[in-house]
Image 1 (cartoon, rainbow, N blue to C red):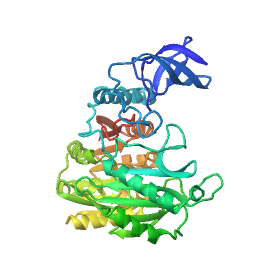
Image 2 (image 1 turned 30 degrees about the vertical axis):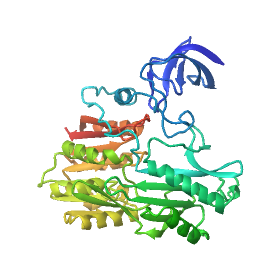
Image 3 (image 1 turned 180 degrees about the horizontal axis):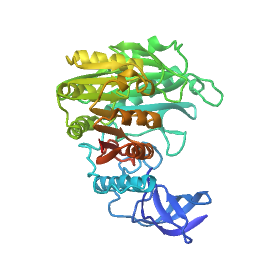
Image 4 (image 1 turned 135 degrees about the vertical axis):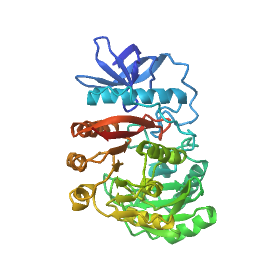
Length: 449
């Protein structure tokens, strides 16, 4: 069904444009921007809304530029690559405000700051995962298409460093010589071993890690691949083989094929070792601004104690420890805990201790109930924080809670519970960690009433 001349009113959380049909039915329009007039085709018709895609533009806004990527219309790495950057920031702030109003029934317009922009909005990603896929009888390494599990081969991707695409092309050519499309893992028939690669790069030191990801641990051509990589890509600092059967390609066992097995980032006075499967903020140019903003919002003091939940390799703890009396980092991933301890030693930090427990388990222990923490940092996965954990944090009565998240749905949900438990939102700082996409990172400061 074609609906003619619909007017896109605003962006929805997730990047679709919102319009309305003749009878007022909401239309979620993919790839159209606020202020544009388009003819749309209905691709999914539900009772209370319809998902549409443009078939013809009647009017395009002036802020829409020519896309600088040949596969932008298909590749899922970007949503807004052809939208003026300042306009992206404006709409992201609106999305945050509207989500709090719609999901949380909260007016926070007076507490939301302008979005902190990324100093660079091309080539900003320090990590990218590419998937093996068949293209006829050839193997390609590419990115998932928009809203699909199909894979598209990027051509000069603009959100990663230029070196990433050069490495991708070399590895793709090498694997075409060594393997056939039958070697690509298929989740349908559970055959094939090849799953993908991940590239990681540090901004300050410029180190690059290549992670080869397979379904099974046994990967006989590894010695040959190592030799060829050392000849064709001698600038690689680490080559890793990781095997996993999970959907998250980096959640598996790994062994170091070449190099030290970690890459090291430097931020201000601090060094951070990053192992292959560790979480680390993905925007290389926003690492320092994010840490500076966190410090500014927490207002550290040498008399205070900080609790860093979901602490990872110590991104926040390492930076803030010299400003606190004590920092306690809680993390359940054994490799991350090991790296956090190594990072503390490398930076001569002696007032940070780690707890290798899930946040759920830690908040049940006497180390949570019998020790007072003045400030708490929460940087959970996208699923957010368990309600009982929020209750235990509130019962511990820290003066400030800093909650960092890129998922607005769970962020608003958890914010409501913290408010119910005696806290108020004093500041919301959006950060553009993901230029050219609809994703937006937020840091919220809660203060105990």
